[in-house]
Length: 210
Image (cartoon, rainbow, N blue to C red; front, side, top):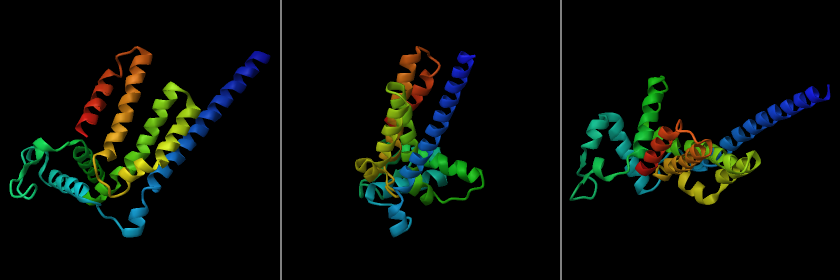
């Protein structure tokens, strides 16, 4: 009778540990998102600096005219008076990600403006990046180390400065894509399986596009 009781106790502890880890991860995601909203709370919803505003303008054009016109867009207001071929000179990962999010939300009858999506893209992906960090570190060192790494990434000042609400720049999406690519690579190596190889290739390509 001792063996079944021990097995039941171990299963309960494992289940409780998994539930506790899930709620801690949820709190870390909320922390990562909310800690980046102070600029919105204090100064309202705005796009910061020149590069984020340029990326916002490009995303506006993508949402209004579609991807084909985006790739062939010659913008005579950028690099004036020479102009700029936008589709061939920008890293499109950020723009395509935000544009896709805007399209999905509007398809679900959530009528957010392009500006709103762009403002909150960085805080949203910072939370997802914290979860990706948990997955990566858990594979290498364990659940406790994964939770610690996720919490540190959520609060590290150097990352906050590049992912605050309104800072609509490439790092907003690229950090998550980079971490998740590392995670998928390690999973492929440890599992010795080709099932995750296409996903690893997709996120590796996305990282290069950002």
